Image 1 (cartoon, rainbow, N blue to C red):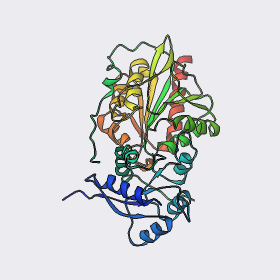
Image 2: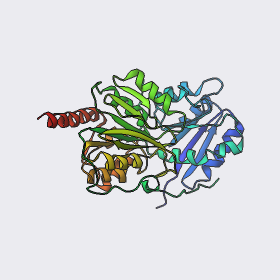
Image 3: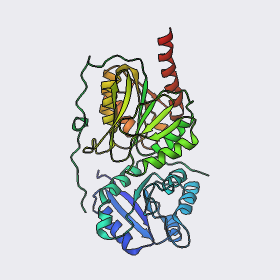
Image 4: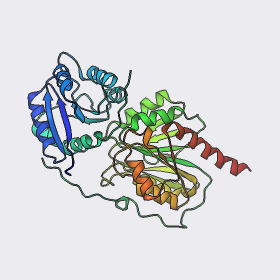
Length: 363
């Protein structure tokens, strides 16, 4: 039986943009644009007759702005929505408002809506659409180029059993993608100031992670910042990998330090969870806790297995609490997951693991 295509509704006030986006998406054999709409009112009328698998939505439109429409959709008839707008520029809070309103993903649209400019984000848009089609959403008040899929070997050599130097410092490594911005918010909000140091890879474009970290820092009891090359890792802090750059962990004496590196995408992502997890396996071993959360694809699965082989504890977010149960599912299938827990349980798991380590030291 042939695979069903992902059916998409495009909502954008520019006729030329609608045409280009339709052409970009229809070039993928797994996607079919079922229709386009010039504003939310036209889109709402179309939704009365037919519900798409995914909606691609602009924010700047006449009669009703896209953010208002997004909130109405998510409160009345939730469907996976991807925001494709030039308003989601570097450092913009609009991106976080869209995630809070229920958007599954954000694809920044070039400010100059030329065909060439839009084609540059074509692969990203097509992948986002297929990922969104598998997302769980809940109510709230050119031809596709297949890139070579590199492993963490492209950035860091494989870990060697028996080569991890002992240390008493414990550290938490978290990886997330689709749905991760809000999931990370939920986890970090529940951690106390005396939590272990946390290093995080959230798949996000360059320019957005500083604003994301600043937002989390303003609402969480712990301190949160965008990671910088060479800085020490301290208890009570969470460090977000900068967009479009890999983040690794290394040891200086008995302390951990962050390394920020350029390099090719790993598992088709930069930053890559696999890269962070492998570095944790090498430099922290049994003193690391790896957590894999909601996201599409398999980034982190191999790295988590490497962590577990070198003695680390590992957790995966369960299917019911994931927006997309892709990354955790793959990590489980690879054999790298010690325990599967709900999103709400993750903060408690982190603190119980950390406190057990502290008790072992004093006992």
